[in-house]
Length: 388
Image 1 (cartoon, one colour):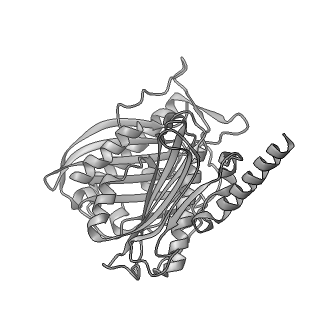
Image 2 (tube, helix red, strand yellow):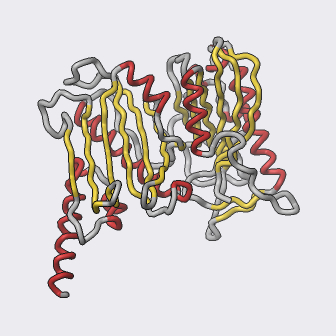
Image 3 (cartoon, rainbow, N blue to C red):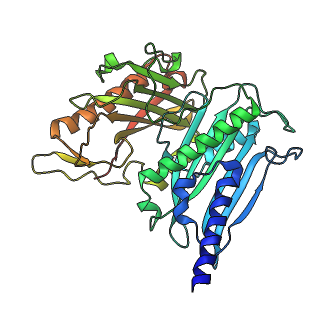
């Protein structure tokens, strides 16, 4: 028995060492330690042009680490992949990305991401996808490439994909950002690293792009704080995106809006976006409204990700079916109870704020909807993105 225990201890130590070194040392070791067994060796497969110079492949990194031989799949599986995208793949990646949730941290211009969850034979997994633009391009490719995509799949202890906690989504997102920053540094592709803190840093004042200039917190009567913005600098007839957040820390009183995001998709991109959100349960009609007290108030619980309210609309833009999604994030301070009671009139104001942002977005002369000649707009409904 002593020999058996010592053997398991040695095997686990070897597995932990392998975890530390695997995938260029980019895996979230602390979060994965709980999945590392002592009764079987890890199986590691990795390749890519940045691990093995001289290979001609769009895979900058392709790494799989697994433990345990299940009947149909490994008991535990970790996968990361970084691929340089050629022009045709950028459109496919944008339209068909299987990750479906929002990225749980702000991203700068030139980066788009999402997270999702899926079931496995035993348990579940969480994933993150991040697409990053490189102004200088990626050297060594057989065809020009100015973007790369990071894909991450990590195990989760949740029983099903519906139970995967927000903290797991955040780990997957941070892992994707860390891998992206490694590529940015290794390839010297002409952009600053992506910050991994979940709060925007202060700037000298609001500077939205021309396409996002409609996003005026003063006009919308949002939080009276310093704001910073990111969004499209050039018009793309397929997709549009604008984001604004307060630049300071803490939650201002009275629960004002401290973050807003506007997204639009057209044609095939619209169909793909709506399907992804439907699959995730974040499209209109996929969730019942939060229960209210007799007085009409709502209890919102702390999930680790700021609660938000999304408002969806449908239009015909440049002759193609299109969707618009406005998301407003109110300032909620959860305290020790890890929940907050939102009074009925405040909850109603969340809806009013979302509608005001949508109306301003649709009417802005330089915004995406007007640039795309959108018409016949119809409100589809709200989605409460918070824990009840």
